[in-house]
Image 1 (cartoon, rainbow, N blue to C red):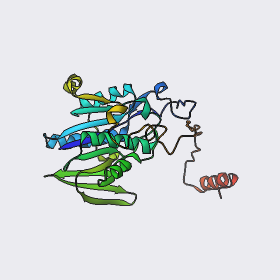
Image 2: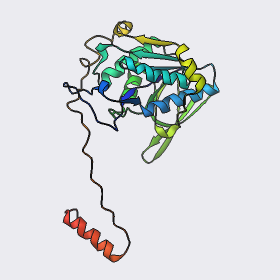
Image 3: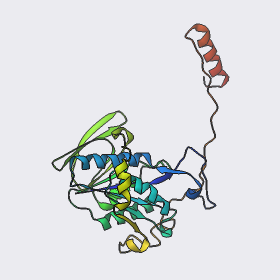
Image 4: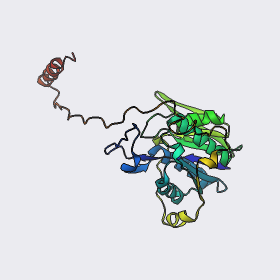
Length: 267
């Protein structure tokens, strides 16, 4: 059994956003972190592996060469193999082109009965939550999004899906794809032994030619050229000023609040 986890190295959006002339983010000029939801997805995979030692966890990412540092951290956490998809042709991809490339990589790895694909709910640099569902559609496998609990036993997968006003419990056949949210678990830290062993584990880099056998991988179908949507502008929103705090529950405080709201034409 294999569990394939799609992970992404993202810009640290808590700092300044650097943008190239073509409107895409200048990732090389920004500090990067592992996408938080993807780490919850990896932890979910590792927890299944803890209970089923025969499970192989493979992490897959599309990105530039420095993405290796994040993938090594995933290996140090307990993943068995890592695959980096990296080529200039893949640069500037939107969610559609990204999912096409990741789908081709998953097909190359091989998806069989019993296998699972894990993704984070969304990446913090785009917040679209589209890539995971798009991969499932292109692989033609079942998907469950916003997963907040997983029960895997005897090859059976039961998950709880978070909704705005509750949750639903779903039994899903494998192979399938699950997108994970932060409420699912707390990602583990790298272990000392894991750090020492991560450079001995299989690490593969696939360029454009490595995936070109897939009919969906052509120069016109990946990267910026294969993206039906393109970013017009990226920027950090202006910092909001501090709010006004009123203390007390007496009549005078209420009158002050009403007066302030009236001055702003809110009431």
